[in-house]
Length: 511
Image (cartoon, rainbow, N blue to C red; front, side, top):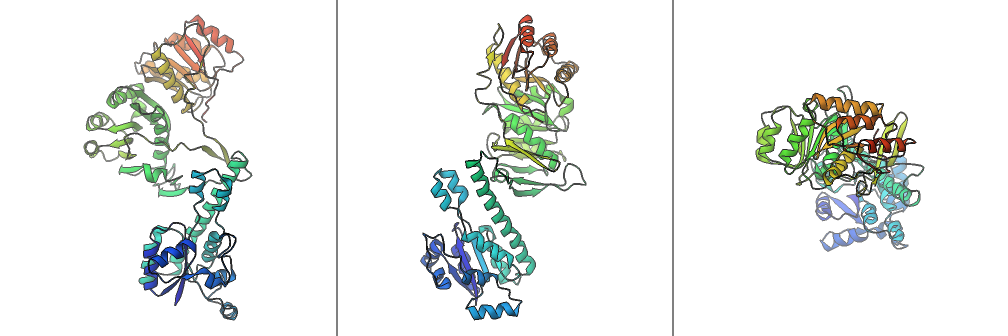
């Protein structure tokens, strides 16, 4: 008779799994709460004490750390010396180990009580998982409730091959590595401000992308905390590596204004159109005006529901990706004839952000890691007026939009907003003057009137030339962090032109 050791924190499906194991000739060994639930459901399990010949002790801290457990798992079945020693020591083989670990993540989410947190660090569980994984040549290691059916299928249908067990071995080491990484990151967060000697970035694979940035590169999407599994649904097409990067930027901007009817159009990760209006249709029309040339083949993020009416308007040009809170079935039908368009929704009526607390970027030989950047809720509202003239309510709204968009646009950048719609943007330039001039040049080419617009910069203006250019274009209000040694000259220039100038005193570089 084969033996299975079953000790799980997540009890979902464990009774049916063990019933199937028993039906297939397995004897069940179990511990604590798992043993209790199996007995209550008529499964004649053996309690771990009978195997270890030693009582569970120290309030459950020690129960499976025992040679009869680990010897039963780890001894090699292909070595006669191991078999002889197992017989000599009275160690019986354990052929399947089913373990999932103490809920450390759930614990740190519900309490700050360090003693309770410490008690929810699993010791015996990871040890058994690692032992079983090491001896995958003979032992099946099961760490995921979702794998119960495939394990039973393998046992019943002669699919329990070395290759099958090897797959579970890899999954097991991923499981314990992710678990230990979570604990280490938590401890560093609690005691070292989140920046310890080691930093672990762990993601769960969602899908392969067709390729990476280019066809010769492989690529895949990994997620934190089920963000994409729970909030990202493919309706049409296949998200590429580049699509995912672009739509992430578009979603961040479109969802930066709460429940407002915001639409953001991006190309290569940068905004080329943005607007907030009374309806999403109006917002899209206004957003498109900013740069319809760049919008061709672009990504559109809609903070709401794409209706048939909006879909008909969007379908007038080629768009590669549309992501929204929802896209109605009628709207999907409108896009059906477009073979290359890709449609995604978030299963909600609005876009959903993960709001990751940390941010990182690969550099040659490593990565840089930091707290995530975000414009504070009252950052624009509390900005300091530096000039004689103050902004009107609409100008303040335009400044807030321009400022938030600038914070999510590649530096150096400037953003011009008028009547809640972006009318010009310059981004990724080596000079802020160039960014300003490029934005105004583009607006002129598009026939957009910048007169009365609000101007935002994600960092200070080092010279007054940007203010001079903005004034010449008719800009009435400006918001920037301030902090230049020439701030007095900037303020003087703004007063000369009768502008309102605000300093937020917070810089938002995005490199």
